[in-house]
Length: 158
Image 1 (cartoon, rainbow, N blue to C red):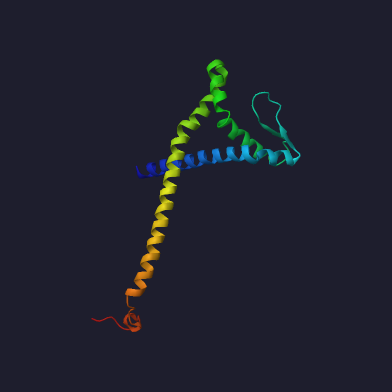
Image 2: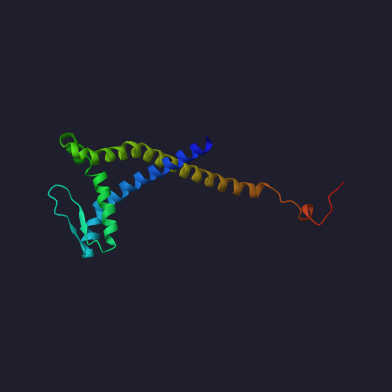
């Protein structure tokens, strides 16, 4: 049972971190993606009328980054459009259900990961601050033991 609990914990952490990274990629794509892709010379904005995607030359390595950015935009920014389309067009449900599942599972786990990481960071700062305080005061108050008291060459008393 402990192994199952451990695997579920790993799955929860990975899902939460992935969800936070998904939003990080989306933010980067909206803030700086246009400069990176348009200056590459092999990417251009797709000719879609409603949604904005990047189309790159498939032989170039930047195509991988463009695919990641397009996935992030589809899952985050364009998600309401796909969900709304699924209410009218039954074929769009195939795309809308995974998008909704990403947010249903990813959002709570992303919040959980963020809270736990912040709690660990605050605990580390508190421990470091306490270690610094106690380290300075303990050096002043604690006398050092004589050097010969713990010499391993002396035989143990019997």
